[in-house]
Picture (cartoon, rainbow, N blue to C red):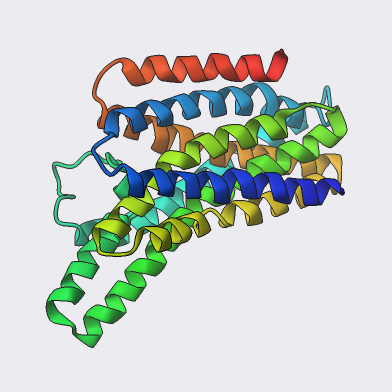
Length: 289
């Protein structure tokens, strides 16, 4: 089996199967589980942080050892990856948040629920409006809200796939296991995300089997990200450094801009901090044992 095919299979398991498993859990156990989700998010964030800082960025810097210019190139590409994902998320938030009633001036300047992170709350608002009016305009707005939700999920999953693909491209050079470790962590992270997608679908009247299937499909952009990350990483040492750096920056935004703020807001205690530390240490064990 070629390495590229292996990357696709592993990423499909982490993205589609991981998200689908979360969707299945969501439709079977719909009770409030914010504390559990909070710990899962912060734990996954800790493991991702260790993998990005101790593996991906280290590999990116090692492509041209001793070159000061290369260091600044890695730093710049990491900043570009972080900034691009931030700007795209900020654009979506600016367009959708004013249409969600509970997101007002007193709301935290970040998502405090998984439904906000993937904008399923925005979709639900338009769904209610359409069910009340049955107007063509409402149907069109509902369709647009569905596209926005799909884009928000893709925006979240695509860089995760890039991290997996770039990690496997780096493993081909270094002989490490960062790709597999990253895929496991992202698969774990996708479970609560899948729960967030499936619960509102079932609450809106969709069948459990269909809701689980649609939730699993939302993990597909992870595969596209992995293909791009692996392809860029396989071209040359410079392109590998670019792929690793950009993916690292995008993943750092997901950790610091989404996972950690949200996990703390979902459970306002010290518990998420301890879960993050546990995840970071587990990441160290995965990488070096």
